[in-house]
Image 1: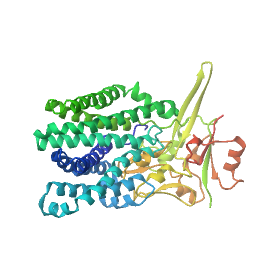
Image 2 (image 1 turned 45 degrees about the horizontal axis):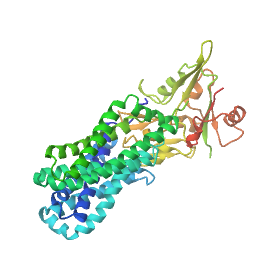
Image 3 (image 1 turned 120 degrees about the vertical axis):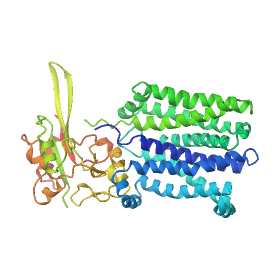
Image 4 (image 1 turned 60 degrees about the vertical axis):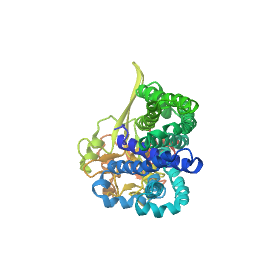
Length: 294
Length: 180
């Protein structure tokens, strides 16, 4: 009765929506700030952003019960503006088409892409706002839940935004490597992004755990589960070591050894960031402990 | 309008689970589905110890977190102050289960919707009392109108200084407990 009502579908959704939004931000940042460095990163990021968020949204829909086999009920989802899910539905249904249009524009896919290319800058600005909205929203979704004191903190959206940008950058870099493996040298420039956002993620995660340990008894129960309890092996190995520390060190090396690092290590660091992001979402959902009521 | 609520005297509860069975009976629930159940708490060590039975159910909170987070607007508060689920609007997103601090909402896999205690609104509107209240052999539960200071439940709460579970969670529950 006390196990979490949400399972791996919601975990996947939180991860995919974050990674997709992050990939969009990485693509726009690359196209606006460093168009000469690597076209492949902007192209790769834009190509994966929309599909990642769309697959994540599909996970969300498959997690529904009556809303899945009576799909017309989904129209009710925008009824309550006090609910974060209502806002999420609005943001997602705007972001997915914009992200797909941006991918079409940047890669000049069919006539749609040629038309959209004329509006590249507006697409980038509107899309970035929606991407940040998507990433932050996944954090607010669980931060407003007072049934789980561990989630109920403003640090949650910050953590999810930082994690979304680092996983998104990782997804974009992997896509760029797939498009053109030779650009992997120039990708070293973007390893700095990993260094910055992984450190932000690490600091915010540390704050979240420490604040929870010293806060309410209920939040401390979840935090204890993560650092020394049932979930601690996953937390220390998957999230802290493989998800943050190893890619952080690899990215520093990558940035300073410009282009000299073996290709599989570059892609490996990105895969580890993705693994860490997914594990972080999973552990936050599975460590949910309700308040002690008696 | 009335604001219905229940006061529960845990010192009288013997943990017989009659309330749970009466509720399942009245609401045609499967054996595994429950709208109310009994938590147990033990304090102290033999020979000085106490064992407490605490019946729990939906608190019909004045500021219901489930109602705030429900994206479809399926959850609303009836004029009698009962937090009610419109079955035909629920999509089964389970956000309300996460939001409820008391974890008294259950998923009905058959209909694919979330259900919970509805304070037997069908019986109450006919002038009766909820099944868990009337079935209890020890009259642990006192049902009535919290808005009326002269009702039995209001007097009970005032006399015994009954408190909701975790009032600090600020949801303003309408189930009160006399714990000792």
